[in-house]
Length: 313
View 1 (tube, rainbow, N blue to C red):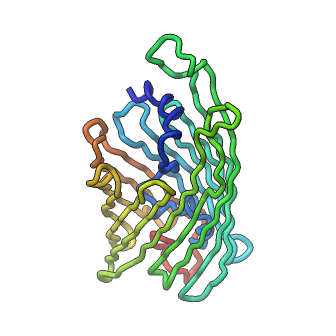
View 2: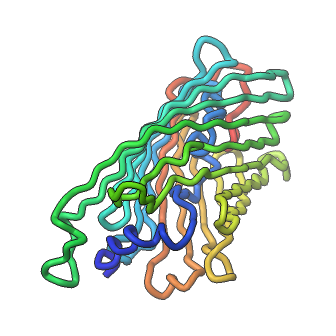
């Protein structure tokens, strides 16, 4: 059913309101390179992450997202580079992203690090109008065509850790406000990329010899749109298994979702994560929630003497 309305929505909705354009992930604490280029190389070893999200299961044409990222320190512990490829889709809309990140540690002390990051990205937006199933036989707004456009952008961020027990970061992955509307009429702008600002923080609270509490917060801000916040708390057991809950602000007042998360550190190099979002908004009567799967792998063993990697490292 959603596919019947997705084309009119993308044609006219940008004229009426402003909202968040970036897709979100529940397992944001393992996926910081997407939001902040200053995170590149922060784990101290080459690290790759693969993540898939299916949102609002059972809704035809509902959003789905996938990404693969790789980042590592290069030349020295102060310099990090990273790359990311992602695909976000909803109905007939496809959004492909390719990004490169660079970070440099302005301060690197035993108990404190502060890094500055820069990124460049290419974004290709594709509308598969030729696959549409219109309500009427001849719909001139579809015209049986595909629309493809590519946009360049850049971003910046700051990321810091303190005593390997606290992290915080601020970033804007896309700063330029490109015109991304599909209306080709000269002088008419139907949609622009909005600058998204992200703030994230979290830490490790020891509860015992083999237990740690891992709180984390992700704040998302876009001008003229409501503030969006993810609040998360995880319990880490023997640095092997992690489970927890998140609450996403939004929806119709009661919140967007309550999320269940788990992470299993299979061995010293590989970890697997999963999450399930229980929808709290009015869509709960029509969808089966949202789920994610993640694979995180260090491509090199950490040096002797390096501390065990925390969820924010």
